[in-house]
Image 1 (cartoon, helix red, strand yellow):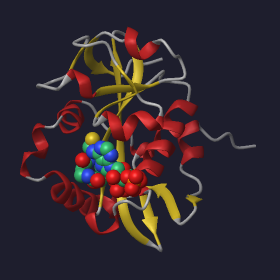
Image 2 (cartoon, helix red, strand yellow; image 1 turned 135 degrees about the horizontal axis):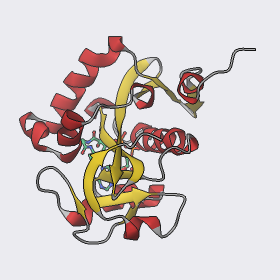
Image 3 (tube, helix red, strand yellow; image 1 turned 90 degrees about the vertical axis):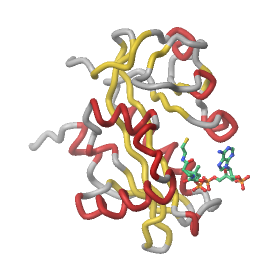
Image 4 (cartoon, rainbow, N blue to C red; image 1 turned 60 degrees about the vertical axis):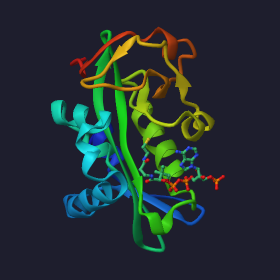
Length: 183
Ligand SMILES: CC(C)(COP(=O)(O)OP(=O)(O)OC[C@H]1O[C@@H](n2cnc3c(N)ncnc32)[C@H](O)[C@@H]1OP(=O)(O)O)[C@@H](O)C(=O)NCCC(=O)NCCS
C-alpha cells in the first residue's frame, strides 16, 4: 500500500462550498495571481508584511489556494511557514479577490479552508496574518499582545491577528518572525 504524505494527500480534490470551489493553485495560476495582487494592492504591495515575509521564507506550494465561481478564478491566498519565539505556525497572505467578484464569500471561504488545511497537519500551532480585525475576527482570529511580535518592516500591532486551537497562544506569542523549524 502506498502511504501518502500529508502534503500529497492535501493535493487531492477541490472542495465546493455553496457556489465556490476551492482548489490548490498550480504553476499555470502564477501569472493570474501576480496580476490579481497588483490589482488588489497596487505598486506599494512589496512593502506589505506578507510580501516581505514571503521574500525571506518560501511559501508552501500545497497551501496556495484558488477560489473559483462558475469555473472562473476569483480569489487567491498563500501561506508561508514561519516560527515565532520557537513556535511553528503559518503566515496567511496575501489574500485577494478580483474586484468584480467581491462580496460573494470567496475571500472568507479561502481563509477558512487554508487555515483548516494548515492546522490539520499538526506541524504548526497557529495561523497569523496582518489584516483588518472586523474582517478576520469573525473567522476566529484574535488580537496578539501589543508589540510582542516583530515583522521585517513596520506593521500596526493592532492588525497582527492569530488563529490557534490553543486559546491562550495568540496573547503568548512573542519574538521575531523566523523560519519554520525542522521537526
Ligand atoms: C478583503 C478581500 C480579500 C475580501 O474578499 P471577498 O471575496 O470580497 O470577501 P468575502 O466575500 O468573503 O467577504 C465580504 C464581506 O467582508 C466585508 N469586508 C471586506 N473587506 C473588509 C474589511 N477590510 N473590513 C471589514 N469587512 C470587510 C465586506 O463588506 C463583505 O461584508 P458582507 O458579507 O456583510 O457583505 C477583498 O476585498 C480584497 O481583495 N481586497 C483588497 C486586498 C486586501 O485588502 N486583502 C486583504 C489584506 S488584509
